[in-house]
Length: 264
Image (cartoon, rainbow, N blue to C red):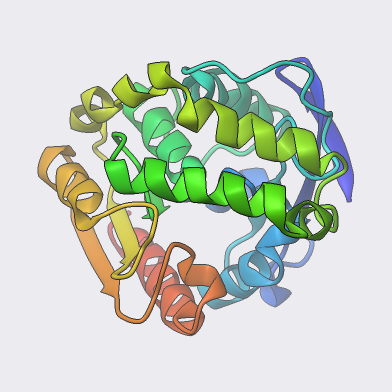
């Protein structure tokens, strides 16, 4: 585990190098950059980034955002624009410090939204985006499920289980849950950034996603300017990479990355 400072805070990160890339510097080749969900971290990705890196034959960067994992603890509530801050301020600083010039962004849930905002800004080159269970606007199903997560946190051992992956599980949970349930967040919408996304995009969503409907995927596919692939996975909820569809998810991402190489 290594640390860097970005956005004024200490963040943990890991770099995975596939076997025949051993010794390569991430600046010299396309690099997979994993952006975790609203309760995720480096540790919660488990072996998925390494598996994708091996299958795609690309280096991979995984890092925990502020308030997650072993990164600096969250000291104040998140604001409605917190994903924009991550996408436009912190992520560019992380990429710059590590010399990653050609990122392929792989985001899950909040991380997928951050990837889309970053790609739409056009301030840095993005080779491609993989968005798993993305959100571009707030749906009733999302709010209901997040409210249910709050009840689960209050009435079960969820805090203890999150403590395996986060230094401050209470603050981690509240930082995510409170802002999504705040009345001001109902108007959150990032569709305005989609038309400026010109790189290839792979959209992956479980057909039984409890946090969002296919309307999210359809909105992205309809509005981005670059080529789009859609993978809807049966028997899969909100986390394709932690489901029985994990192998299919790895294969889809590896194929997408391979096609990026063929198109230059």
